[in-house]
Length: 113
View (tube, one colour):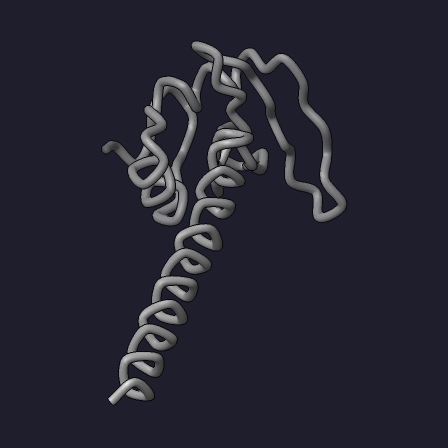
């Protein structure tokens, strides 16, 4: 991935997140340059939102006036991270339930001897 695309600069953190979340730099540039919605955050950053191919992309950036470019700090797709977080506890719960069942089975077999 390139560090700069069409007057948008990407931090190392942003590049890592794009790779992890299967977001292209082109999608981020589209979101920054033509958002469906944007809002200024308390810290002065701008949050851009744009739906691309049914995915609601969220991008955090800051205007760098001295360079006349946007600095993208991070990006994600709304809903996709929440789904991943919900799956982890379900898997952990299933593993705990399995361990508990195996423990009970072991204890029941041990008592019968």
